[in-house]
Length: 549
Image (tube, rainbow, N blue to C red; front, side, top):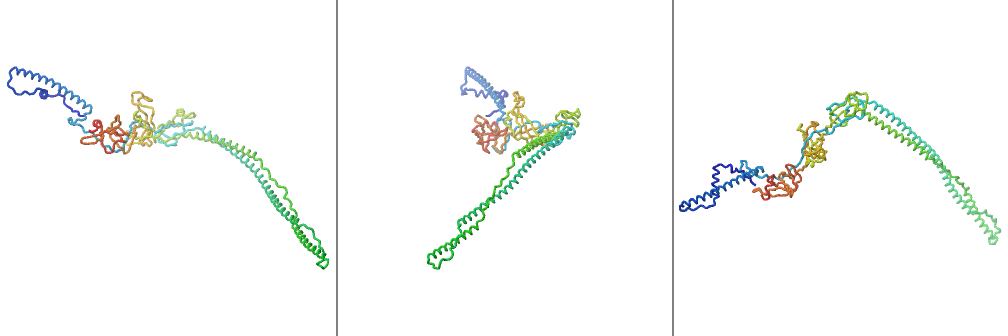
């Protein structure tokens, strides 16, 4: 598309107008030139002149009409050239077309951020208020002083707290005596039980020894009685009377019947005598019959342990009660000491003292005896601001806030100290609009904004509360990403497209659909559709030049 900036016909000089007019006359004349003829008569000459005059008038009308059309076209062309930014005008005003802008697809680190400003605030402000009544005894700090956690700010005087500590200590001592007494009762109950059982065990041991002796005697009796029975039984089996000797032989004739009978009796006599002697020997081996071991010894009965255990349990229960009383007494003492310690008011956190309202001799709370010129309430007597952690509150418009979430990193700069840049983190993102559109959501005509808080974990010592801070919140980033100028990407019905250069002389392009993962005001990250090193058209050129240009 080309737009030529031309001078309107209405501005032509008179000599130029005549030239144009003559040219138009010649061009507009449709009559062929007449061949030379013989001289005409007057009537023919008059007719010829009349025809020429008519043709001239017609040509003049057509010329004026064409001039008007040329002037209108020039005016419309000039307006169109201005509306499109005089896109193809040369430095000298000549009709020369501008060269299209071409960018190379390359890899680069991409980031997108949101910038806003706000006032620097201390990370936290502590209003130190005493927890007990009293009269201010000493003030240890002054405004502008830096304090650390645990530093003494001021002290209070309160005699009633000292009395409470003494009374609580006496209560602990009394309770401890009760515990000691109950413990002694438990020890006595255990000692009584041990004594009874020790005596029982002694008696049992004595009975057990007698029983052992009895068992030994019983076992010995059984053994000896068995032996006696064996010997007696053997002797009884040999029992016989003393034999009678038949005397001398009746004659010398061994063949006689008398002699043979005597011989038989004599032989039997010797046999019976031998048996009788064996019987007498067996009787001599049999002792007197052994006597039994006697009555079995008995064991002593066990003590009535239930009553002894009951006494112990009762004593232990008394110890439990005494210990509970001691615990309460200790708690009361600890509480009294804790309250007394509260008279020494310490810094709950590190920071700078920004206000001191405490004055020596003034009453705090319901304490009496102090001056009446000071504060008699428990209001803040010292104010501490923590500068170890500072924050910035900013307002972000409703479009940008959709890209902000907790935990996002940011950088903070300060107009008062341009050489300082701090890292920060988003900690709060409002869910209800707080900007000029309305107090809680905004339906007015102003810009709707949302409150965002950022915390600076390690602020520079130069920073002061209230300084103007400019925050830059990083909402997206990608390292070594494939990027093109944002103006090279066109969004349409089919999605994002770019014009990829396919030829240089003459310039030729093709439309290609791409997938854009991230973009900012100057760059777009291409996830799919392009390769590193390819060339694309940028800006209006990418819209005017289509495929095959």
